[in-house]
Image 1 (cartoon, rainbow, N blue to C red):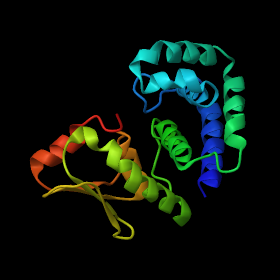
Image 2: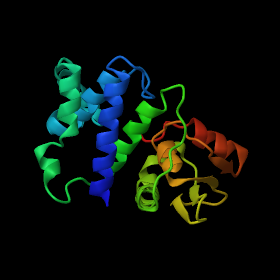
Image 3: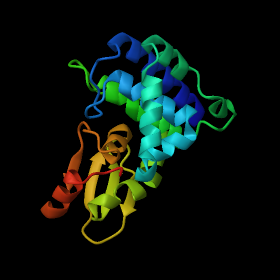
Length: 208
């Protein structure tokens, strides 16, 4: 399921990138569509340089790889991203994390447009995103330093991603919960719990 979802998101992201053009804004602060595509190409084709995304000591290598990728003609960048790197063509290599990253960055393009609206996802895609929220949320909410429980608005299923008394309870659709965990503005979320803790979660640099 992760592989087919990743394939759909990759195709839709590339199609939208072409429609928007290289200089259109995204929801990644300060990044154009060209910048976002360069980031994804570095992740897939420059694994050593990509380590600088998470490890500051290697940020110079990441910046050089980004500059190299973003210097290509835009249509060429899109077509290069449209076909996964060789490693990702191996069955099972398009992991859950890879699929979720493509989803998040697709939304970074969609939600930077004036006429965007939440899109319906099928049940299988929602289950995949919920699976990631339950597991990945344990790491992604750490910067907030408060207990957090996630609740699916469509099914009522819940998951504690950081234990503790009086948690912040965040209710929403799986897609919106995932976007929140990656520090993106999310649609239709409901927050409940101690006001100070809710504020701490909403102002935290999540996903770091």
